[in-house]
Each structure stands twice: as C-alpha cells, then as structure tokens.
Image 1 (tube, one colour):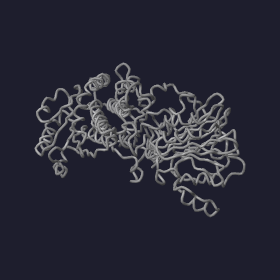
Image 2 (cartoon, rainbow, N blue to C red; image 1 turned 180 degrees about the horizontal axis):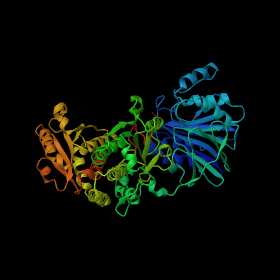
Image 3 (cartoon, rainbow, N blue to C red; image 1 turned 60 degrees about the vertical axis):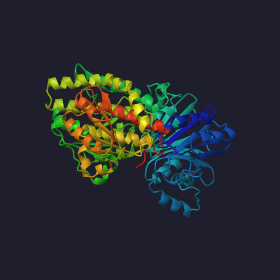
Image 4 (cartoon, rainbow, N blue to C red; image 1 turned 45 degrees about the horizontal axis):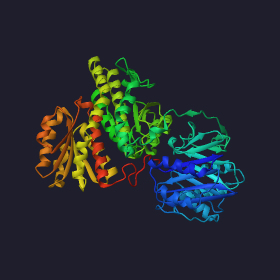
Length: 607
C-alpha cells in the first residue's frame, strides 16, 4: 500500500515523480502529493483523489526543481483528504516527509512533541516523523533521520527533504519496501522497480534499518548506528513493456492471457530429464523424514493457493499440513520447532503480516521456504529457501497469473517431496511431470472460450448475492472464485463446501439465486451433482465449471464451462481461469475499475 518516488539530478523532478507514481497506482491509493526543493524552500502540493487531480494542480503551478519526493497514500490514520495527504511538513516548514507503513508508537511521540511546543495539523501518524526529524536536526540530515527512526516503533519507508540541503535528500526503511535507483548524474528512490525502470536498471535493495543519502552524483547507505554499508548492485533484467497493457483494455485481462506463458516459465526451469529440481532447495529425503508437520502461511489469494497446497502435499507426500492466515498465525502462539517446515506464499514478497509470520517461524527454529514472485523482496531475503514464481510484474490489484504460478510451484514441491519420500513410484512421478508440461496449452484452450463466460456474465451482472460451492480441491477453487468476484465487482459472494449447504446455507437459496459450482474432482462428481440438484430445487441458477469428460453435469447445470481433461489433482490450475474471467466480465458489465478496485491495494505492507 502507498507508493513513494524520489528524484535528484539534472532534470526537472516533477514529471519524473508523477510518472513514477503512475507506475505505482496498482498499489492502491486515495490521495497523492509531491514535495520539491527550489530556491532554499520546500514546496508541497497535494490533494485527495487520483493523480489526475494532482496533475491539475501542478498544471497551475509546475515546480521547476531538480529534487523532490512524491507519494500516493492509502489511508490508515485519518480520512482521505487534502490535509492528511502526504507529504507532511515540519512545524518550521523546513522538512517534508513521505511515509509508507505505520508508526505504532505515534501517540506517545505526538504527546512528547506537543509538550515541546509542536502543533499538529493532520490526523496521521506520519506528521510525527516530520516534527521528530526537526526536533533532532542539528545541521546533519542523516543523523537527524537516524535519531528519528531509532525513536520509532513500527514499519516505515521514508523519503525526507530539507530546505537546508539543496543537493541531498535522505531515505530509510524498515518492514516496508524501498529501493534506490542508480543513474548517471541522477539517483532515485521508489517503493517498487516499475516506478524507475524507465530511467535505470541498476538498483540497491535497502535492508531493514538502513538509511540512505542521495545526491545526483553519489549514494551512500548507512546502518542504524551511522556506519556506512557497502551494497551490491542488483541489475533488473525484465523489460518495462511487460508492465504495460500491450493493447489489452485492462491489465487484468492481459495478465490472464499471460497465464500459459508464466506457468511455463515457472515449471520449465525446474524440470529436466523428467525430474524435478527445485533450484537450490536442498531438502533431502532424510530431511523430509525429520519433518513432523508443514505449515503454509499466506494472505488472500495466496492463502487460497495454500489450501490447494495442503491438499496435494498431504495426499501425495503424507506429511501433515496446517494452513494459516498470516495475520492470525503468530497471535495464536503456534507450536513450532526445528521439526517443522513453514511455507510462506506472497506475490510481492513484502506482505507485512506474512513477513512477520516468517520471522516468528525462524525465531522458533522452523525451516522456511518462501514462494514469491519478486526477486530480492523482503520475504525472499529472510527465508532459508526460495522458490520464485516467474509471473513477471502483476499490475492489476486482483491477482490472477500470480495465483496460477503459486499453484505451479506448490505442485512442484508436492511431487518432489512425495517422490523423495517414496510415496509415488517412478511411473506416477513421470506421469505427473508429463501433465505439468501440458498445463500451459490447456490454459490456452480455456482462454479461447472466454465468450461463453462473457455472455453469461452479461445476463447476470445485476445479481445481489452469489454463492460458490465445491468439494475437495473445488472448495479451494470456490474460495478463490468468490474472492475474485468480491474484489472487483463488489457483488456479495460466499464460498461453501458443498456438504455444508444443508447445515444452514441452503436457507439463503431462493428463486433466481446464482450459484457457481466447480466440479473437477472425479471421486466427488456424484456428491456435487446432488448438491446442484439441491439448489436447483430451490430455484437457483447454476453455472458449473467441469472437465470435458464429465458429461453428467450438463444434465443438472444451466450453463457448463468446460476445461480440458487432466488429472483431478491438477485441475485447479486450469479451472481457476474461468472463475477469473467470470469476475472480470461481471465487473466490466457493472462499469467497475477492474485494475484498481476501491479500498484495495496490491502490496499490503501494514498489519
């Protein structure tokens, strides 16, 4: 959540700041602003709303400064309005600050600063930072920022400019992502790589409690004690055009059509000579024998991928698996030991709840394996083992292709563990690998039939409440389908295990109620047919998603979306695409902003 961009160099800063913030819109925001240094003065322009509103203001007063910081805010403390927008300035107006994260002890700090005569204008926790830096400032901006962050409890990514410093600005981070872009006669900071990729491919990835000083010619990184830290340059290899729409109306549609490629990219490097090789993850058969339990920890869509992971790892590798919501994991005092493996799933690799769960797991002695999409992200750096999902940049807030690659990674883990433990033989192992290789082409077939889903959506987009029901892996699919629909169409929906209908939920089924039913599990088809008949008998309209071989579903559902035949265990990775398309077209019919749904953010970096 929130986006930060900073620039210092020979060019005019404002267009670069705005361009960078536009590249970060996917993170979610409700206000925006910039602060620039010009003529020994810090100038702040900010407002509620989209970047277009900020640009309108800037057209009236375009700063010509060569240094500045910009911000897109997602409200946590105080309502979205002009006053609460970032940047925030100190009492004297000498300092301007942008901040991503949450200052947990801001009330205590605010009380202290008020006792020292500082007056607050906003409801935010961030204004504390601006005043606190001013309080500590004795002529050295780096030292003032270091003393400030030593007082702070919580998470932060900070950008700070000072009217005394015409050739320098400062940034810092803890638990919220921040990178430094290295250019020629110019340098940058940003919350994420796409914001500055147009200008440089060489970056520093800041670690927790690092503070950085930037001039147009030099970047110096310091630790919290003020000692200089030597950093390695990370060179970005992916193309900026992969973060553009490439002719699609929305990023979400583009990213769904990228699913065949990214599944292939995730699987192919890990399969050679009909064997799975999990990069540098050297978990041996002996190691697996010493694992009593696996925990899978994630949030949102990644959590739903984890539900699939639990099912297939338990079924094939015969290791008990618990699936946990990251925001609840550490607060329930989990029973972790060195005989546990914790699998962390996160698209961004910066999800704060998940990152904290990872740190807690390591503290308690468990080994950690992260499944993440972003190279060099906080979670990937903290983990014992990392399995990257090569999904590329995912810009739409509602995750699609990243979910498919998370499933692909989990299948690799499950098949590898099961084979090493001897629970599947050579023939089964090779069969699963063969079917993995077929996944990209099968997803391509699904995407070719999108018009059927589009037509159905055009007939039902006025639905007030929609139910998703499934059994086994189809229940996991139902949860993800329901979440996708809620996220971007704002239609109320719930997912239920098919067998739970008669335990209360069926009371809500009435004439015209729309029910979506994934039916891909061979051993549960008869049970699901019975559940479909139950809701049909009460007036429901049913859309089913099933494999081509399951002709019996045609006799009970109103509309059937077929996917290519595949082993039931692998069905979720191709059957989720119709559910994603359904959510997309329902949102389009309602006129919703599918890429930037209200109140949501792509990377959740607050607890």
